[in-house]
Length: 149
Image 1: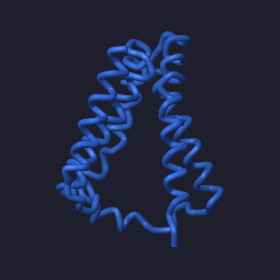
Image 2 (image 1 turned 180 degrees about the horizontal axis):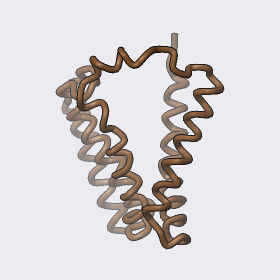
Image 3 (image 1 turned 90 degrees about the horizontal axis):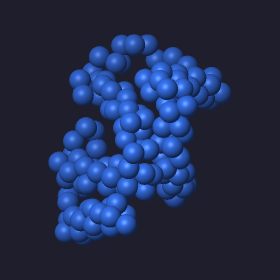
Image 4 (image 1 turned 120 degrees about the vertical axis):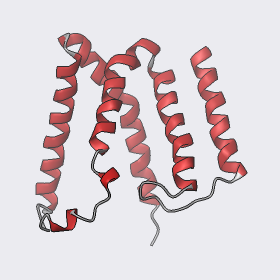
């Protein structure tokens, strides 16, 4: 079965990723309370996820017992999400949308090449070929151009 629709979903997530920093930074600036804006963003995300869970009917299908074999590094993912939102609140407006998102996405791609190569944090192994590494280097050069001009 083809999974091409997943790439469409990923592209939509990328568009959302481009819009969200401006929304969050504007909310922080308009309220004068960046941390409160961050809390609002997370609260809205929680409400959205709860609504989706109710819609698809996947509320608590399993007990908490299966949570015990979860690796320690899987639990603090929300901390990384908070770091992303803080960067959106404090950095994106200062450096601009294109350089900010270029840095975020490029760092994500370069980091993901390392994660894939070493099969870290649950990803399957995909060796860092010269083409993958070249792609990361080209992205870094592209961000440098976007930031410089």
